[in-house]
Image (cartoon, rainbow, N blue to C red; front, side):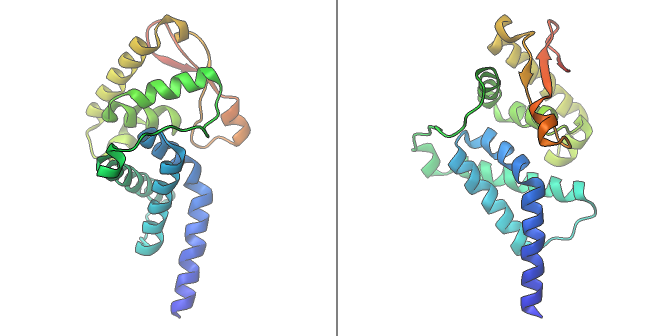
Length: 193
């Protein structure tokens, strides 16, 4: 009976890795800015998932739990002595220059803005869903999104303001993710093509 339960947990975890792994990697990378560290953080999240074997009300509840666990693991990692004294350089992330510029700009935002921007634009969550995930009010999330966009506008300047950039969204196939474009408008908002 114990072997069957372990086998069921492993199968459940493998399915979750296939379903949410890419999304959690992007989230972890926005915190660590290092692929190896991001992989470690996501692996730790899935180990917690497998060992705790929580029951979820829905797939969205399951994904929200994994996102929260991944964020907490990343925050703990960033606070560690090891991380503070380590030179981080990621040679393995290869993206186009424009997307790299956007990723770098989002990554350089303060954590509270970076998390909101990432969950909204890269994962496709609404402000209300983000509020539930990170434990804030919807108006606080909306404020963080607005301030984060303002900071991005200042960082990126006019050279990227109306230039289409690649971005991934939750629920899209790999082909759709690779072919979804966004652009900053002159008003500082982001539109999808």
